[in-house]
Structure formats: C-alpha cells, structure tokens
Figure (cartoon, rainbow, N blue to C red):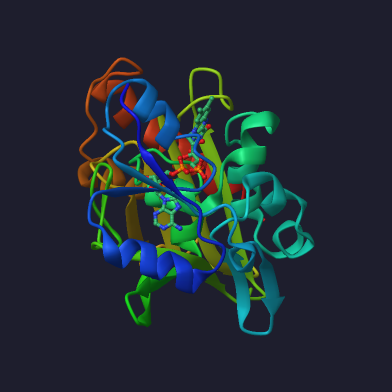
Length: 277
Ligand SMILES: Cc1cc2nc3c(=O)[nH]c(=O)nc-3n(C[C@H](O)[C@H](O)[C@H](O)COP(=O)(O)OP(=O)(O)OC[C@H]3O[C@@H](n4cnc5c(N)ncnc54)[C@H](O)[C@@H]3O)c2cc1C
C-alpha cells in the first residue's frame, strides 16, 4: 500500500477549498465502506479528505419543515433521536437492521447513501419519505431528490468538488404508515440480500399513495409509486407482487440467486405493507 496525503478541513468552506484544488481525492466520513475498499485494493488513495472534524455537519434538526440529518450523523445517533423514533418508523427500523452497534457508531447515514450500494439499508426508507440531499457544489448549494441521485452501483450524480451536507425529510404526515424489512443471511451484521421499505396513507382502511422502495434487486435502489393500490386485500397484494416482480432485475451473486431474490421480494413487500405503522 502506498502513502496518501491526508486533509482534515474543520469547516465546510475549508473543505470546499481542499476539494476545488484537486481532482484525485476520496472523502471519508465513518470510513466503514471506504477503508474496507482501500484495504482490499479496490481503490487507490492519493488524497484522503477526512470530513470528521467539520462539527457543523454533525446535527439533527426537527421542526415544522421536517427532519434534517447532517452528513456526519452516525447510524447510532439516528437511532437515539426522538423525532426519528416517534415519526419515521421505517427509517428507525432500517437503522436498527444496519450492521452491529459497534459499526453503527462509525457508519454515517450520508456515507450509506453516497456509497450507493444497490442494497444499502437506509436508502429504501429515505426513498419512501421522499428525501432530498443538500449538496455543496463549489460556491452554491443545491437540493437533489434522492430518487434521482443514483446512476449505477457505486455511482451517483455527484461531480468533482461536490459533497453532501445533509439529507432532508419532509414533515411527518398524520395518516402515513411506513415500515422496513430486510432479508439477509444473518439479518443485521451484513448487507441485505433484498430489503424493502413501504409507505402509504391509511384513512380507515382506504389506502392511497403507496410507495415501495427496494434494494438488492436492480443496479440502483428502486422506488415504485403504486397509486392504484386502494385497500389491503389479497387481490391487490397479489397484483402488487406481479407488478413488482416484473419491475425488478436481480442478479445471482455469492449471497443469493436471482430466482430467490425475485421470490423473496414479493413476500417481503406483502409483509412490510401488513406490518406498517
Ligand atoms: C462490518 C460491516 C457491516 C456492515 N453492515 C451493513 C449493513 O448491515 N447495512 C448496510 O447498509 N451497510 C452495511 N455496511 C456498510 C457501511 O457500514 C455503510 O454503508 C455505512 O453507512 C457507510 O457510512 P460511512 O460513514 O462509514 O461511509 P464512508 O466509508 O466514510 O464513505 C462511503 C462512501 O461515501 C462517500 N461519502 C461519505 N460522506 C460523503 C459526503 N458527505 N459527501 C459525498 N460523499 C461522501 C465516501 O467518499 C465513500 O465513497 C457494513 C460495513 C461493515 C464494515
């Protein structure tokens, strides 16, 4: 392993300067993905920009606008947050299924997003809540819908010099129900074979605005809007499973076969819809 240069900006503006002065760099948050890829020789590190000292990126705000999670918030900090516990059940459930308590201390929510794994655990819940990313782009800030952020496995819309400042979720909606489920060999402690989050409005059994987000079944996390779904009936659930299995393109790898992924996706989504609260 060759040596690399380490940069440790302490403010967002310092980070902007560091990134604008060089092209060949990697950003580091918790390091649980990045350092593993480096250790396994999957990436070459020339310049490593450690974001961890930027205190202004370590915050969670909750107000009438919604929830904003800074780029340095760890998965454990998310789990401990009262607003997340009370208003965003699918996000809480996905955080509890992420790795182990030890890894969750280091791993950040935004790192999970930016790593852009098709099977990342926090992404489906963020998709069904219609999350947006606040991105610093040279001298300006832009908002990107999470739904439009992923380009392929490990690839995002971020360009040279860009970095994510936070992820923003809309304010909770009264009758919105949501949940997250994961199928993995050992559930938590490892990447999902398939995962799924769902959300819908439930007005006394009348269902509207069903969203299903899926991980591990396509090159990027997938979000499906299923507005025709109007009640939780066997008929609708069976139709839904057919629509979903026709929309996904899972692969066979060391963790599972494409056939199993297709089969389990339908089962998972049905269970997620029935267990949402
Ligand atoms: C033992 C182990 C178990 C794991 N289990 C799970 C699991 O169950 N579920 C799961 O989903 N994942 C799991 N992971 C993967 C990993 O922990 C998560 O993806 C984690 O949330 C990544 O966060 P991080 O802060 O460590 O990211 P880092 O490794 O620091 O960064 C990941 C990527 O995002 C980029 N990045 C980070 N912050 C920013 C930013 N602000 N702007 C732009 N780019 C940025 C980095 O450059 C890098 O490319 C596991 C990893 C390990 C080692």
